[in-house]
Image 1 (cartoon, rainbow, N blue to C red):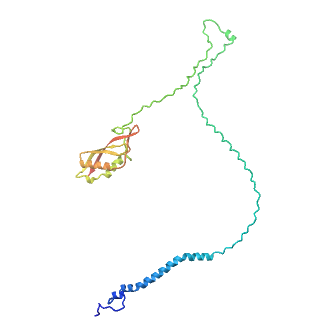
Image 2 (image 1 turned 90 degrees about the horizontal axis):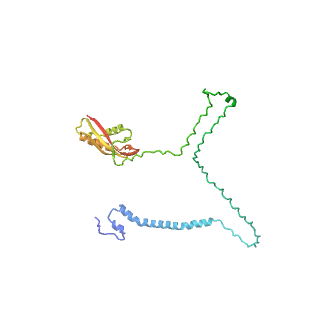
Image 3 (image 1 turned 180 degrees about the vertical axis):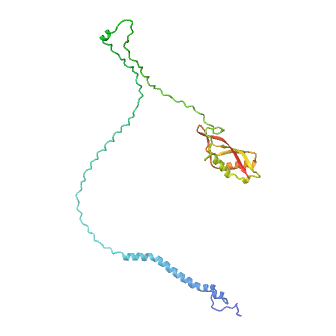
Length: 280
């Protein structure tokens, strides 16, 4: 058996640590190759950094080499002759714009209600009969027909200038808080009262009835508010469970009613609904 406390001379730290141990284990191999890998990575990283730093200068040098050579041109001064001044023609002032056309105000036609003055009918004079006809008349007590005067037609009466004012009886506005029992237009459910009865029957929970069999009756009263909602729902009948479930069913229906009206104004209206259901 080898002495584990003795070490060979000139051993590295890794060899001392892994002395008399399984050196095929990956840690020993990793530690022995780590300095070489680190050195290689440092050299490669340094070369890449130098290459990235020098790359812009290399690109700039290549662009300068590919640039076309510039040709220099000798510019000699030439005596410039003074040119004659160009006399520009004087600009004539533009004539002022014509004045805008006069806008005549719209003519307002005033219609005057002129009442014509009544005129008398012209008097029609009948000329007397000729003398030859007058000589033919006889005197005495015998009745003779004289000349009939024309019938007088009175002129039509002048038109009345006054205007008749129609008097409308002002009806008092209905109350917004009072609950009416009689109205001009009753409250209505969308689709009619039969549609409301159908909804009540569909939403009625018969399981809430304990021992209720046969025919049960109750009367449901509620107030249809001015916005179509229902309040003050109350059922009055001999069976308390049936009354309670009827009140719950009516309150669960969310469809709004058409409110009752008085003088065209919506009012609060008390509605009575008798309800009869058969349970087997």
